[in-house]
Each structure stands twice: as C-alpha cells, then as structure tokens.
Image (cartoon, rainbow, N blue to C red; front, side, top):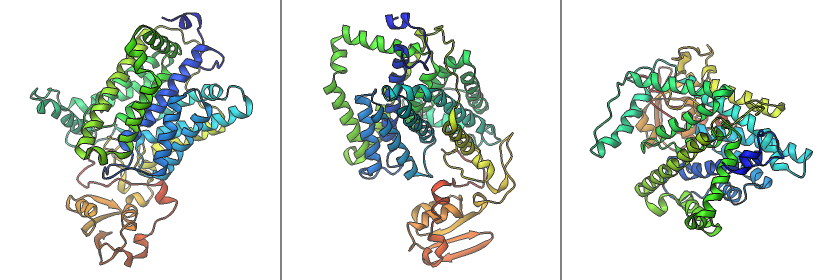
Length: 483
C-alpha cells in the first residue's frame, strides 16, 4: 500500500487531507464517466435513426469531457451538474431511472458548490464534495432500497409474469446461441432470489460495518444483470459504481491513485495509454459515436459496438472496483461521515426522492419511479404490492383507453397487442400528430375521429402535468416486464 495510505487515517469530511482529496477526485472521474456512458447508451432514446444533435446533449457531452480532463476544477463540475439537470428537465417525464439518481445527486452538488463558494473561496470543490458525499450515499440507498421494495409484488413473484424469469431467458439465450446450452436454474427460485438479493444489499449499505460489502455485491450483481445485450443497462451500472465507491473506506481513493501512479512509472504502455493525446483521441472517438450513433455504424453495427465496448468497460470497472475494495478491507473508517442529509436543500431532495418512489401508489406517475423491471402495477386503484396499497383516489393513472384503430403505427401496435393506455398518454402521443385518425374506447364508449384535432383536448398538453407525469402502457392480462 502506498505511503499516502499508510500515513493518513482520515475521513472524507476532512477537506485538507490527501486521502480525502483522492477519494473525491476518483469519485468525480467515475461520476463524469457515468454521464458519458449514459450519452453513449441512451442519448436520443430508443430511436437510433439519425444523428443526435440536441444542444443539451452536446452541452452534457462537452461538460463531461471538460471534467474528465481536469477533475479538480470546481467550475467544470458545476457546469456538468447544471447541464445534466437541464437535460433531465427537458427529457421529462420519460427519463431513465438512473438519470433520476444522477439528477438528485447533481442538484445536491450544485447547491453544495454554491454554498461552498460563499463560505470558502479557496477550496470550493473539495469543500462542496465533502458536503455532498454523505447525501450521495443516502440518495443511492433510498433509490436502491425502493427499487428492491417495488419487487415485492405478486406479479414479480409469479414465474408466469416475472421480469426475473423473462430476463433470465434473455440472458441465457446468449449461451444457447453460442452452442453452450442454457444454464439450469429453477424458475421458481429466480424472483425470490433477485428480490431477496436486492433487499439484502440495501440493508448492507445502511449498516456502517457492512456497507463496503454491500457496495461490492451491488456492483457485481448489477454488472451481471447488465451484461445481457437484450437489456443494455450499463449506464445504471456505471452510476452505481460511481456512488458505490463512496461506501468503501476513504483510503480506497488513495490506494487506486497510488497504484495508477506506480503503473505509469513502471510500464511504458501505461505511460502511453494515460498520455493526454491518447486520452483526447479516445474521448473524441467516444464522443463521435455517442453523437452520431447509427449514422456512422448503422443500427446493428452501433448496437454491437455499444454492447461490446460497454461490456469491456464494465468488466474493467467492476474488476478494479472489487480489487480496490479487497485491498483496503479492514482499513479503519472510524468517524467517516454516515449517509445523511444536511440543510434545507438536501432534505428537500430526499423528500423528492421518496415522493418519486411512492408516486405510483398515490395515483401519480408510473415512469421513472425506481420500479424498473419490477412488474409493479397500481392502475385502476389496485396495487399488486404485498405491503403498499394504492391510494383510493381516482386519478389520470386510472383513466385507461383501449385503441381500436389508429393511423399512428405505435398506437396501432399497442391496440393490436391488447395494451391499454392512459388518456393522459394518448393526448401526449396525438399532440404530435393532430391530423392522425384514431378510434378508441374510453369508459365503455367508442370514440372515432377522422382527425384527432377534432377533439381539441385530445391534442393539447398540460404544461405541468405532462412534463412531470408519465404513465406506462398497461397489459390487462397481467403486468409484463418493463423498464
């Protein structure tokens, strides 16, 4: 172990120590990489047709690259946090769950940077990060814990509908395609095993003595889940790696920095790999692919490159995380700041995280509520959760329509497959196609329109509700696996 680790036994709240600085610097680098992986994997949504030139996407990309080139810069970190929050707000409500976690942490980061600027003009970045890290831990615990809790429902535990079983089939299809045969695991074990594992990890993260173990298990478990090309959720995994690093002893940052310095000093290939021109070239290639996507490679080519490159990066990041955690095992963490929120801003953000997770049970939104791949259903005032009931109030979540016939291809496909859609979401889709013909059934009444615009309400959006609230399509035969 390097001299800096042997000499200093401190906590992440001590801004004037080398160990604290190393931990925060490593976190910033991992945090910026998580943003880059998100852009590489999801920018532009599921539709991969054409280049992605949205100004906010490019702003996040530029800010990410600036932070990676100088992770100690407070103003660059502030620009990244602000850019991501603007990107997040513009994409609401259909935003991925991990991007909600990133937004919650970035909001806390931006507030911490503003406060630190007022109080300590000489060391703004380290002062802000020292304040942020305990809150970031708490944000992850809340998001992870509520995601695990959401799986305690009758559909997830039913092998006929469970995401655990369908994802297992998708995952093991790789082995069959390679002629290796499918691994044999009893399907009845999968839902209980996955739900139980996530709940145990959440508990381990809460307990100070076991939180490093919980962090390692969370990273390994979710890397395994993300490795399937049918799922491609490496962006969540990289967000998890960044924040989970904060659950390791503070010496982990110094340990990693010492080893990288030693590697550069001893190996010529490492000096070449970590040289600024090479880093610039790698980041430029990643940025070009993230922006141009299938315009450069074609849809199948981009999907293959995306999966292969993220798999390789995921393997490297997971191995480095586990090895680093192993090498600092037993390091004293006495006095290390626990997971907590301090100040009005952090407390308000914690309340928003909890409210976001409970929104389905209150009849609110069902998209981006940390219920990914959980089979949770709360529509029509009926909750399939084993512990949490649905609030008995009629809301837009319960106003479901059946598509009988539609000119819009996506709506027509939903109708053919028997899915239901909230009237709230039908309005969102038809607002972009007011001239499209639509026939749907609502409250037992069949409504046929040669043009959706013939019903002004159907093609109009509420500027607040449609920005903040999104609903998933509903399968009347039972909740199917969905993000």
